[in-house]
Image (cartoon, rainbow, N blue to C red):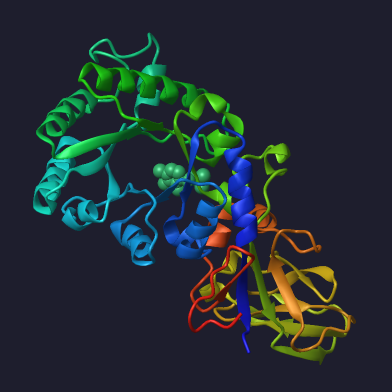
Length: 394
Ligand SMILES: *Cc1c(COP(=O)(O)O)cnc(C)c1O
């Protein structure tokens, strides 16, 4: 008998990807870092591929290896590989690597020599500081040959040489637009212009990266001019939009439902302090329900007194402190019983809050709400895209 579970609707993931793919001529890379934003990287990756994604994106090599270990053969890009990390296995296992500088390029070349085959590389354009420079009065710094970032021309020359030597295949060139919640921000235009300059620089060095990519979900949903050949979509695959504009949510369905069974109910008199710290006091005789998920499970302690949930057919609010393992809800005189289901968030179709609702009361993002669900909460994957996992009963 489980107490708390994150129900993951893999059909929603597949349909979200299909919807996102329809927004662009570009290919879709489903970003499954951080255990698929808390949804389970491997099942989500399979569902995203079924929905039409042709690439998978992760940060670390360990995340990439987990996909390969599960038998996933599609292209995988890992973009946050720490300096000094051995890369020969990544080359052998056909994991595409992001390279942002000449030192890192030498390490990847060493890995390729050890593996005895070329490394597949996406050159990373650092768009973080060009925005400010290009936006400075008088335009780009005249000391810089073009609008591309420092170090880029050295990198493309070294990469062209390594490609000629047969140690690397320069598959892609990419950067981060950081559109975030403000896709119309002028910084996005400056970054985009800097990326185009960088592509011109790469071409001058003799490189023609087949896959140019800068957009994440925000760019995909709001800025067609950022799509290029490939779009790295994370949060959109999980059914949330990073952009405030409500129309960007229309085609998306949240995939995760977080729910827990009421552990205990008790009837108390007026004036009863509730939970650690007694920050909440009943104003009348009331029924209190204890919900067995807490901050160790990813229910933020900041949700004390404000976190929304659906319980006993009505929207309610966390009463008092969120503890490590549980929180309390005051259900008044409603007939809530032990074992009843408390739904913290889900797609919103049954009256339950969404992760966006949690994000708005906590001044955070849906990304943080879904990705922090802890390991004690069992993940259950449902939908046609779900493959039964040994040891986990459906
Ligand atoms: C996480 C990440 C993404 C996905 O971003 P979303 O906003 O979730 O679509 C794309 N690119 C990079 C480099 C990332 O780290």
